[in-house]
Image (cartoon, rainbow, N blue to C red; front, side, top):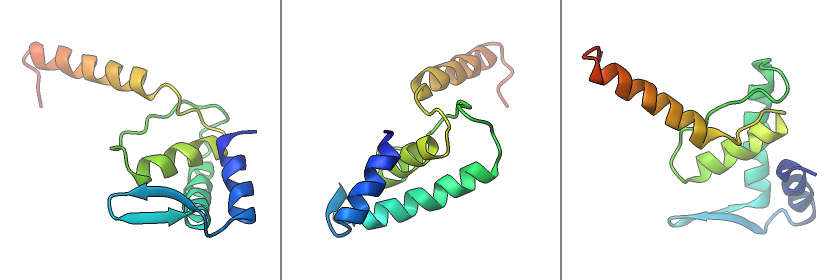
Length: 102
C-alpha cells in the first residue's frame, strides 16, 4: 500500500480528522485527499510514464505534502528530489563559475 492509498482509506473512515497543520491552518483528511486527487489527476494527464522521476521544489508546506502524495498516486517517483536538486545546483554553479550566468 502506498501513502496515497492510506490517506484515501483514512479520509473515507475519518473525513474530519486533522491530517495536517501548517501555521494557523488545519487540513482535514478529506481536504488533503481532495487536493491530492486533483493534483494526481493533473499529473496523470501529463503522460510521463510509470515511475518517471520528478523533482518537487517546494518549501515544507501543505503544497509539498500534496505534491509528494499525488506523485505517488500518479505512479511517479518523487523519492530522489534531493539528488536531483543537488545535480541542478551543481550544473548551475558550473555555469556560473564559467561566467555564463544568464
